[in-house]
Image (cartoon, rainbow, N blue to C red; front, side, top):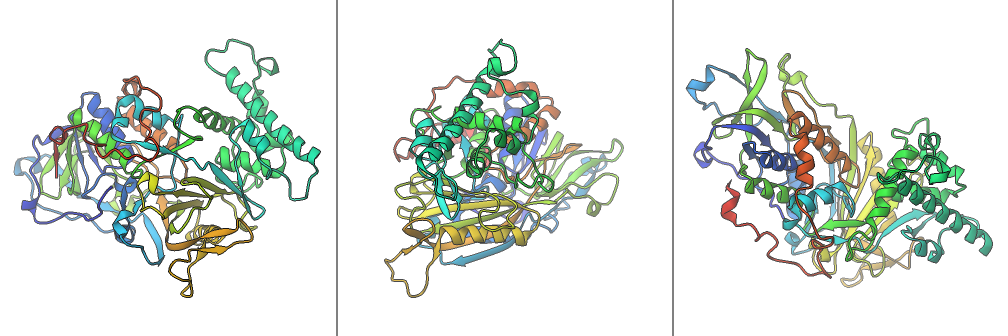
Length: 580
């Protein structure tokens, strides 16, 4: 768990770094930067990895709850603290361009009182976020050895979808389909119609499984229905049109689109949909979902969550990089970029200590504004058109009875008619070590184009899931009646709603890494990271980096709530070569 108290002081407080030249210098220890550092170090490159904060993870970290409001409200839009101290022999060869940072969080609103002890609550800055059991991120951890430094818990409560004022379970097997009595249309259906609806859903899943099997690398059969493959024509269709061809009812389509294929935008509004999902992409996610179920013997469902929060993931890769020779320095801001004016390229950084560090390749975190060499620095900025509204809540009891961790999906138009994007909520309990026993953390998010609309959707979802605690409530009374969802609704004790900018990674003489996106998993972020690796000429090494270890499925999952206090003791601290 990170502590958000940043360190700082006079120039004498900063360590001197030796050597002063590296193959790669990275600023910020977010997940993309940490994976890049690990891959570069394992490829034999000399790596310097610095971070202005006193903790690992940057915008991908997990921080104590008391630090959340100050972290989100920190003004990063001012220039980095500058220092004019530099090597006189070096300044003749290059010039320094001041580096500025931008604020990536806005519209922060908190309400309620944080329960004590407040520091026992840990907040993920990337929440809600999960990993599929069969996700590439899990393979990367397993095969690179990063899983030695982090454990996971399964989301044993499964997924729920909000439909017609009720929370309904998302089926993940044939047994679940036919046992669930909630998959029916708004009108009352007789037994025959209900059975027909479930049979259509089962046939659809069977069709998807046949297509996946026929599309596997080992399949040598021809294409088409004979081999079980979906036709190319259907694969190019909008996924919702393909689902309609399968005669699936609106609710079942919503389950497939938003709770399994994880579409973000209203797929019924094809003309205005910002991201229309094709059948090909939808089937790909369904295949990932299907292969995740049962991959690990001690994992229930398709999803897992890292114990102690997602901030453990960048730490795991940083430790891997340190063992491979990377040098780490926390509490070390970068104040300027060094420019070779003759070659018109960046060749290094100036640190807050005043020391100049030269490098062949420079990689910056997403909060840095990269000044263009052809125009004033104020004229260069990233495209900040995309946003995601997020919410963090503390509640008194579980959303789903007898479940510790559960995912809830609100499809478009389920909260209000104008709702154009899906809202997702992830409940976590003390069994993943993010809150005290008897309390629950809930993360919510939805993509948005403006802050008002995004926060409106988040607040509406909170109203549906929780009741607010009033002054008349007795100290022990933490549940109220709810006619719409269940007999009881959890009481909302504390909440924070805010908006985050989504920045994309950029390439050039300086590479920048992306912010956490609106997705539930890391697939897009990993793909962006692989593109950076290719530009660093270590793309071929990435495959070796991902397959360098054999693994036993399930060995890295925590068993029945037991926490291993020696989680990070497998590597001696002396071997980390970290300067703090």
